[in-house]
Amino acid sequence: MVEYMSRGSESECLDRESDSCLPTRLHQTHEDRTERALLVALATADRSAREVEDSLRELRELATTAGAEVVDALIQKRESSDPSHFIGRGKAEELSRLGEELQCDVAILDHELTPMQRRNLEDATGMKVVDRTELILDIFALRAHSYEGKLQVELAQLEYRLPRLVGTGTALSRLGGGIGTRGPGETKLETDRRAIRRRIAELKRGLEDLRRQRKVRRGLRDKSHIPVIALCGYTNAGKSSILDLLVRIDSVDTDRFVNADLHERNELLSQSRGAGVLIEDRLFATLDPTVRRVTLPGGMELLVSDTVGFIQRVPHELIAAFRATLEEVREADLLLHVVDASDDRMDARMEEGSRTLEEIGASHVPAIRVLNKIDRLSPNDRQRLARDQAAVLMSAATTENVEVLLSRIEAFLAQRRTIATFLIPYRDGGIESAIRERGSVLSADYMEDGVLIEASVDYEMLNRYRDYIVAREG
Image (cartoon, rainbow, N blue to C red; front, side, top):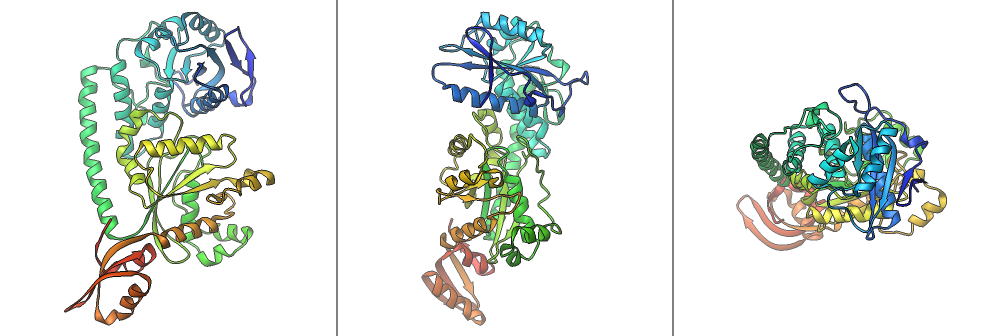
C-alpha cells in the first residue's frame, strides 16, 4: 500500500523518504539534469481509495520509466474535477508552493486534462504540466525502435496534441525538452497546426501501406498452416521472458529438457540461443512485436508473437495508432494471457487485460491464463493460486512448470479443428488412412494424380500434412 503524510484537510502526500522516490536516470533534459516531478491525483466520489492508490503507484512507475525523479505526490479529494483548474484554484496554489519548495520541474497528473485545465495549471503553478496520456505517449516515443513503431507512436502523439494547441501557459516553454516534448527517437514534436495535419495524413498513408504488407505476410503465413500464438497481458508481466524461454527450449533436446529437473534444465539452457528480444524489469520494455518459430515437444510447429503490454486506461490514440500491430492479437489462433502472479494487484491486472482485449476486438480469441513469476510466491500463495485449475502456474525465470504450459498448448491445438482439402498422391496411401482414422472425411474424389479429400482435422494433423493441403476454411 502507498503510505501518506498529512498535508491540509483535502490532500495527502506520499512519503518522500521512500526508496522508490530515488531517481532513475533513463533520460535527461537538455540541461543534463533529471526532471523532478510532483504527482497529482484526484480522489472523486466514484473512485475508491484503493483505486486511487493503485493508479498513483502505477503513475510513479510510469514517471520513473520516463526518466523523472518523483519527489512527492498530492491527492486532492473532491466530488468532481474542477472545469478550469481540475484540482481547483486553491489546490493549484498549494501545488505551486509545494513545487517551489521541492524545486520541481513538472507536475504529472493521473488523469487526462483539457487544454484549458493544463494551461491554467501551468499559469498557476509555474511548472510544466503533463497528464497521464501524454506521459504514456512519451514513454512509447522512447521505446519505439522499428520504423512501423515510430510511425505509430508519432501518429498517436500528434492526434493527441492537435486539439490541445491553444497556446501555452506563462510558465512553460516546451522547446526545452524533457517529458511531454519527445517524438520517436527523441525528436521534438511539431507545434504548427497545418504541419501537424499534413504529417498526420502522411503517417496514416504510411501505416496503411504497412498494414497491407502485414496482411500479405499473414496470408502467406496462413498458407503455411502453422498455428499462431500471441503473448498478451499487462506490461512487465514476463511475456518476453516466456517467448525467450520457448525459443531456448526449442534449440536444445526438447524431450530431455521437459523430463529434466530444474538444475539440469538450466545447464541445457546455458548453451542455448534465445529469441533475441529485450528482457528488462520495467514498463513497456517491448513495443515492437516479435514473432519466432517454435517446435513443441510433440513435433508441432508454432509461430509465437510477443506484443506490447497493457496498462490501465490505455489512451485511445494508442489503440487507433497501433491497429496494425494489435491485429497480431486479433488474428491469433490462441492467446497466452500472461499475469505477474507476484503482483498484489494481480486480479485487477487480469480484469484490465480482459477489458483491453475486448476494446481491441480480440475477446473472441481462445486464451490460456498464465500466472508467471511463481518463484516469488510464498507456499501459501502458491497453494491458493493452484485452486484455479484453468490457469498455468509457472516461472519463466526458473523454468518451473513450463512443461505444463507446453502440454496445455498441445492439448488445445489437438482438439481445435478446421476444414481442409488435401491432395494425397496414391503412393502416400498411409496419409489418406491417417486422415480417415483421425479426421472426419466430408468428401473424397479419386483424381488422376491422387485422392482429393475434404476433411475436418485437428491442428496437429493440419501441421503434419500441410504440404498436401490445397485449400482450407478459416
